[in-house]
Length: 591
Image (tube, rainbow, N blue to C red):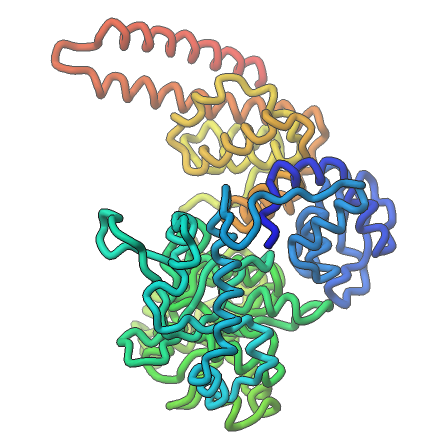
């Protein structure tokens, strides 16, 4: 088994790759200022909204919401797994792809991934020798082709099936495949999964990061997921997403979110290849971020009972901040006593597709649930409806959905839409970044707002070479501002790689919340020339350093003992005072 591709090689490969050439070989690109444009290859749009930036080495598809590096484009357009996309670019560049580790039992460096890949093969091979497991799949209606598609395997009823195959167990322990009997880690580790059908869970690159196991015995836990590991987080991953994205070269119409592995598997067998499953946890913002990276429409499928509606409401609350531009959420409720697995087998694919088409839009579900708590026949009830709606609508970004909901509330409350909008207003700052250097400086000086970090990151992504101008990088960590650690990490990335592009940072942070945040920022145009970007960036970093110095000064005074400041503390405070004076002088010069 080949090992992992080192990150250092991926960075070198992207540095040698021209994304314009890669995409231009597949799409007809036309020059548009500093960028190139084309029609989206992922949607059926008629006007170009697909842009390629040579400076950033990134593509941005505003029609489908997709974006990424040259590797990401090949994965989306050519439907290639990550290793094959890297191999494709390496061949173009005349490079040989190195691998770390490899082999059945030789697990080094990022060994947990190797352990998971090896376990996947072992489980799949074991399924062929497990008549009881095969019979169970047949009884559930799962064909051999579908089982192969999802890589379903079997963990035998043995305490050491895997542990015997990992003489050095550390990587399998880290991957959540093995564990020790006691917390001290003494003795020999044993298998976590025993006598279970095994469903591999992939990341968006197709790499196995964990498992879901369905017991074939009397275990009280019908389903068992891998524990939280450095690679696997239930709240950040979805079963079947990789398979759904690989199912079609064209854009998926939507993604259907269900609650169980078998639901997603059976729906795929009936032709619904775009079903994904949460991993025994409620829907999270991270889940929605993953979903909306692939499609603009998400349909949640829940039981029609009280528990199902409660789960749907929790999903709605998570979805509200993510609803903007062309994004859409719908909610589908099943008849009592059914889950997607059993219902699609009973009524067939055409009838199930009709139920999906009849799914309730988010706006209707929200208003219907709120209206149940208010008597709209009375003045007090209509006022209560506005009060109930307010905490939900203030989480929506300005846009068509918010406007439609305000109009609907206007009808139900019998108040003018303008009055409803006024009542829903919140004093909180808007999240949009300032659009001019003057506005950016004003926002930065309003206090320790995360908007300042956001703006600095935005400017850095536009001109990564600015990172080498930042002095006293370590001091920025002291700034009491959310997100400053991510900014410093990005600065360090570009300082270590002075010629790196935005695309390389995105690939470095692939499949992480940091990477998703960078992509969102990179989509937003700045509308500034290079000189203005540089001036505003220097100003923003100076503002952050000022906050960091003041925070450090305050901490020193707080830490002073009853006898007052020590000599070392006094000297540090004097140095901070001098540095603050220099920062303030610099800020005044920039005004």
